Length: 182
Image 1 (cartoon, rainbow, N blue to C red):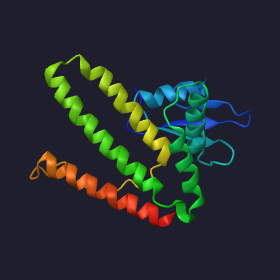
Image 2 (cartoon, rainbow, N blue to C red):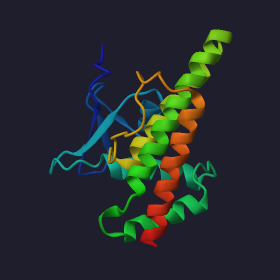
Image 3 (cartoon, helix red, strand yellow):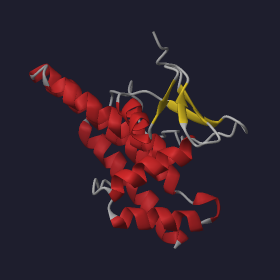
């Protein structure tokens, strides 16, 4: 049985073929995308140099899905990502994206809990969506800016209106900082 807590190690050979070290067979980018969709972390390394190629391949998976018409990212978001590479140090974009996806995951988790209380069959579809979202976040951010400064899970003192006001305030602050960078 594979240890799903550890990333699945994929080795890239000089021939550019990708080798799954757990199952001792060759895999495709689509196979790797399937591992990620199922909630598995992957690490892709060059066999000869030992270089970590994970980001490169995850971005390639996203690009291939986008080129097939499976558009997830609006052109405006893609433009903003390209612009963020022009700002020394990457600007605030990676942290902003990470925070946004953290909030999205938290909302999905709450929605999942509410829906499964009403209909246990809804859980499977929402779990798949959550796993896909997590893989997308990791591919887009490479783990940068994983610190969340908002309220924690155990912070149950405030009500939903206070949480929403806090999120709006944080978003306004981020927008203000981004406009000052322009």
